[in-house]
Image (tube, rainbow, N blue to C red; front, side, top):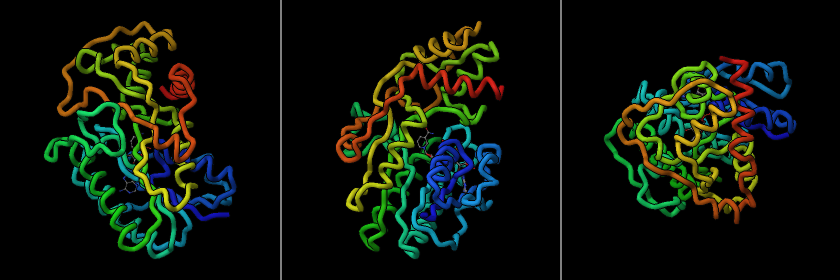
Length: 310
Ligand SMILES: NC(=O)c1ccc[n+]([C@@H]2O[C@H](COP(=O)([O-])OP(=O)(O)OC[C@H]3O[C@@H](n4cnc5c(N)ncnc54)[C@H](O)[C@@H]3O)[C@@H](O)[C@H]2O)c1
């Protein structure tokens, strides 16, 4: 049985990861300050002998003994990471610094949940890991984009200087049950609006494209990366390369929910990327990983979850 720390374990991705690790019989310790996560996401695990939670901000150092660390703690949607941008930068950088210190002291392997946002508004399509990105350093999204970029730098410097075993994963848009209802992410927004038969808000003309990865696929990639040979440090893109327009997504959601909602258009927020799509060749060759779940299948499961929530 491994001792595994999951920071941000009460959030969307973290809680699904905990489900998997607990089911495998690992000893799982969650550290979360509930900034965007919720006890509800993990309450079904609280009685398990191999599951523990500490309420703590990762900006405060943590002294525990662990074999592996999944560093997921960070607000992930623009609504949340812009609410307190200084805290977002602190969580990204000081949090990563503290978790890397813990990995160094304990000899644990550590995985960083980085993001496609490190590519900013990319001028290269699709994005490979070699692309350095096109990021505004002083914009309203910079707290997250630059915070995650600096965290990647720290990961690689701890690896080069101290031999810490690192895994840097660049996560592209992921969706599924337990996304927060009001976090402004496009899939949950559309589903909630459709289930309430409210207008569906599209920012811009709806022709901008996104790729959407279902949470189960994402976790397969995350766990395969953690299990990979120590020589595999990443960064590795994990996401679904199939592209859909935002307008097309709205149509699918309306169709599956049988909603009477209609689509309305509002102005695009600043620095919103026009197009983003992962090149996943590296994940395929290194990890034998690729997503399996089609958008309509994943949407059905997510909509079923939201029917019980909204
Ligand atoms: N979901 C996606 O599409 C996506 C895409 C790219 C990257 N990511 C990354 O994956 C990770 C998880 O994302 P998610 O979608 O589950 O988001 P989430 O907001 O649901 O989960 C983040 C969790 O971290 C916790 N947290 C935030 N700041 C903290 C702090 N300072 N100390 C302790 N806990 C803190 C929150 O309370 C929450 O439980 C994040 O690091 C995010 O940047 C997610």
